[in-house]
Length: 467
Image 1: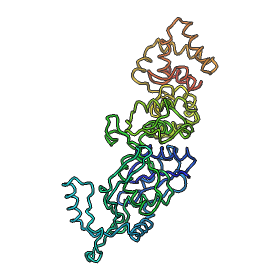
Image 2: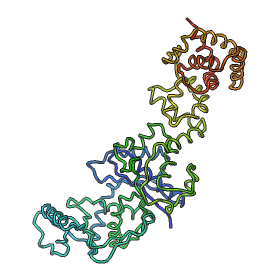
Image 3: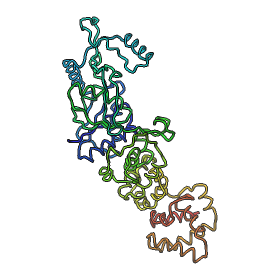
Image 4: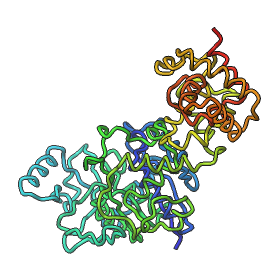
């Protein structure tokens, strides 16, 4: 069997972080089995669907590195095919036309609620002669749900899920205006796309039994179902707007790396022993549905920060530089020039050691971008106001000018300067840091000197005593 999975979001907004995890699970399962991962845009709700949302979904998947196979499918484009299947079900005697009015349906719902029934429609047109239909009223098409026995969904995550057929409604397949319902469209599309495994959130679990009715009525082989637990916030409630970041793009803007996001999302509801960090290749090799938990997972920002920090520390400079430069441009509105980019590139190995996000890296790299003369922060300005500190910097400047510009030689020169004057390192390091970065806190002072380069470092030292 060829494994085919699909991710089928509705284009009514951004790509939700929970949807991103669903896409990731589908992508990994398909890649693990050498199969195909398809993208279907469920855009039948024309009033709420938008091209902007479609772009946001595609952009989010591309940023996460979850490439889909083939062209994305528009569910709306298949409306004629969906209607064809509804009419075939009519011809098979597995569906019927229903002329129940809005008022009648409201009465049925009220009666079902009063009686505590889950089945809302009372089947009044199920076996009724169409000749009794009201004139000038377009009917809907309903499926004939089984009335006896049970419907069993053999779920690969949740186990067997049993529904008594007496609880199943004769659900609408085709509306009076000829448009298909979600239930019909999903089944037809999954069948026509050859989907072998439907992996989706467990909020769709109740839909599986209803959708099985269509597969059975059409004599189609249903896909295997796997309903994964939802993601909750740190407070245990379902993720919502009050939990801050919801869209994948929010996490990009907050400075998280796509590999870190995927690593973290995979660990929300799935495990492989005690492993916490794994590459895409490892995740693809190890992923299986039997390791997916049944219970909801809680989103933990501290854990995400820890994983993202790991990816920052271990990223190659050439890999990390482009997203950092993009983040700097987003923050400042300008792209760093060639000299500033060189400084940042040299500084990156030191900058990443204590940063959790790209946003923090942007802040830590600010000294590489600042133009002379620097405008020091208050604490740094106070340090530089001390005449003795400025005198030490003037003397140190002469030693540094004669020093080979390598991190090791610079460290030796500063330490030698301090020892020769029997000073504590902080006595020199603090004014040196203030002069070079305009801040009281920065990466290691030798890394700062190396990153700025000889010409810029000496010029910034000169500025301190220029007046």
